[in-house]
Image (cartoon, rainbow, N blue to C red; front, top):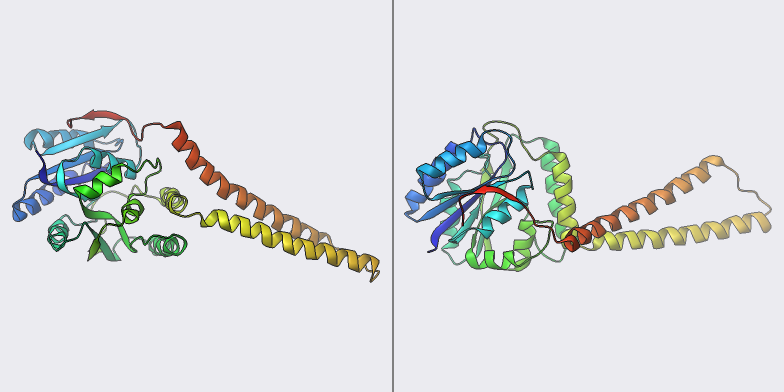
Length: 309
């Protein structure tokens, strides 16, 4: 039997936040007077996160958990929760309390106006560095420019979706998941609410610049062929420039009796051409890597322990 709502929360070393997160989610569901299930996904935590989750699940049968054998990543954790959810509506929310669980009520009420997807759009991001906010803002605006779909700007994965959206989402076999882009690609009727994102209450962010960069690559290569076109255009432009340089050198030597000298100019040209070539190879390599991951057909994650069916 389906519940009214499934709330999916990935966790990585969040033992200090789990209890508060659980109680705040439960309070919202009580206010809405709806049946619920909370699905915690332990994404390879090395602290006592799993122990805390298991204790809560024994006290509340509406709490389910999935524990991965190792860290498989935030997007894989969300996807695992969606696969095992039974709610007519599904909420995706991080476990660090930066996204206030109380907003679930607003998401629910907004969806009642006839939307299939309602996402939470950030108007501010407390506790995050200027560099992190700037790079994130630039990335999403750039992604919208080079893709044919409109991915909401200034949003994360915090949103509510209907079960029919989840069904279609599960049909997408991309190994490198980028759920916010995949949901936008589906094209269901969507809307948003705004909020101020809080800073972390405890601990440090698990989403460093390395993961941000990998996430950005997944988003770009998953939804745009522009980098491949850019590599081709760069090759054409450089070839044209090189052709005219050759013509100039030949004219200077045989017509104007001038000798082109200069070690520095030669090195600059060689390094420039080498840089373009390596950049193009790197771009092509990213796409080949995605193809390779898909062809291998490995599972997206491995479950060590769970109380879900």
